[in-house]
Image 1 (cartoon, helix red, strand yellow):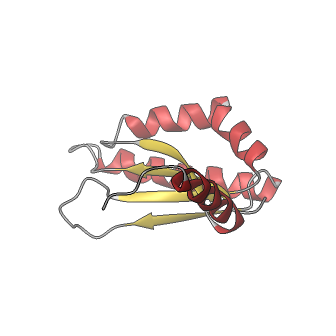
Image 2 (image 1 turned 30 degrees about the vertical axis):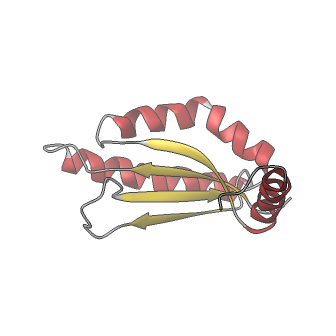
Length: 121
């Protein structure tokens, strides 16, 4: 199925660790580029958000086949990168994400389940 992804989101950089944060961000981009070159992921897209008063400062969407994404998330290299990242930013999180066909299938399941639930009047 096309549309499997995972989301890596983070909050503000821990004050005093800005230079380290820049280095780890560049390391992360090189890591994901290497995964893409090896064919372990289809693509990745880093996003930085303008200040907006919320907890989310940026994120990366990583796309690929579910089994490959699961393998990446379970790898020692990914876990090490997340540990390094967690030491320099607040509110680090990783979550499965759904786009394209995967989103359509997930919404179809939601639709089926919601048919059997009482609706608010």
